[in-house]
Image (cartoon, rainbow, N blue to C red):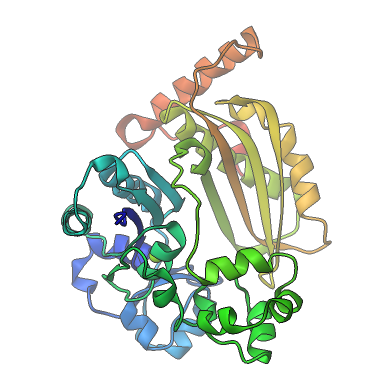
Length: 388
Ligand SMILES: [Mg+2]
């Protein structure tokens, strides 16, 4: 019998849990993380959820639904805690795949464990360790493949621990609601429910041609997934999955291009100093804009070669900003994201001597800014424009 060694781990109410770690007096209360005035709820404690708060939901609505909600602003510690959490996973196995800031897969295959009991013990120990060291509650799913492990981990939150034995995948899936399948959106759900298909078992019972007309071209894959089949490996491409992002919500909507560009550049500068601190380089810049009604657009582009200098991205920034921000409307939020991490050492410096100078200057600014909580050095474009 093969061992089930694939684990999906999913932190419970991650942002809230990170906040509660430093404010234990708030544990057990109705707590949410989100922007106060114009923001949305990005994480809610289970107590807050029971009172009708969900994500994403406008914060103003959340405080109406739940008047005693304790609404905390984003503290910005989340990526650091996430990194620590995945570091603990990597203590266990090199096969760790981050899916998002608070979710990922582990393959315990390389641990050489001999029994299902041994696997369970190791996973329980990890769950306990993440709680003990980071005060983050985690739900775990163990199965023979990623899909089943992922669905299992979400089933008994918070602090869930669900093991699906090898060979029982289909049996496990059959009674579950189709909404548990990652990627099945409201439209597809509606179509399937119209055919009285509510569970994965219902999908399997449907004839192939009926399924094909309901789901379209991907029906074979869909059917296999509904039976709990999945042959995707756990891929520890740390670099690929990793990204850096920063966003800012404005107190009032902004419509001046120069102002938005200045803010975006400031966000980019901050991110690139993190990239340098990680001693890595990056290829892709994505800009996202959000309008007053929460609709959003993004645009991204990659450089031919990865870089650790913000100046390499400066020429792309206005172009991407114009592409994303194509409606003549004011913005409430801008977000800048860097992805396509390249951890390999630079082959040769195609940027030449000028960039060496720029790199020294950037490194010097990073150092000064790190000293004594920051010397407060900023590039000229980060300064607010003087009012005339
Ligand atoms: Mg989670």
